[in-house]
Image (cartoon, rainbow, N blue to C red; front, side):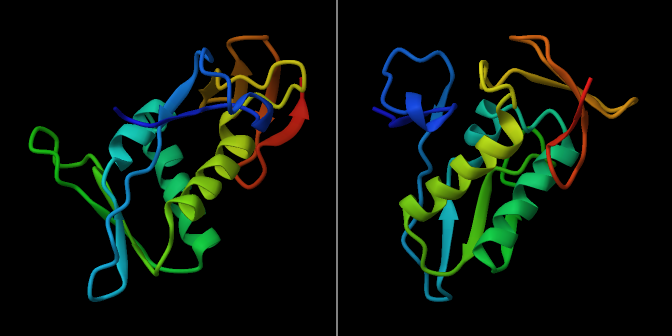
Length: 153
């Protein structure tokens, strides 16, 4: 059975009936070069709805690279679509908990609605006018690539 992690604020992490969830990262043991691989990276990005936008996926990989302070390499092993990142190789001896904490931090900043009453992962990005709207509560705001919350509309 796959272990799952709720996609939401820390307060709901133990709610087994929560609607939004993703798989917990599956990590291989470090190889001779000191690299680990997240073998279910494609599943995680699909469940976070990052695979729909190459810009958002690239931002997630860049975020992990910056947070770990090391090189990150994408592996594209999908037989049907050669452009899909399936695994992620990270230099360094990291634990699953290290990786999970960074994924959770990214989720808190870039995936969840900024409204304190909502906090659901229901954001819809509109690239043309650089806005984001929550499909759950309806809040709309300008999107800033560096900091998610900019100015509420």
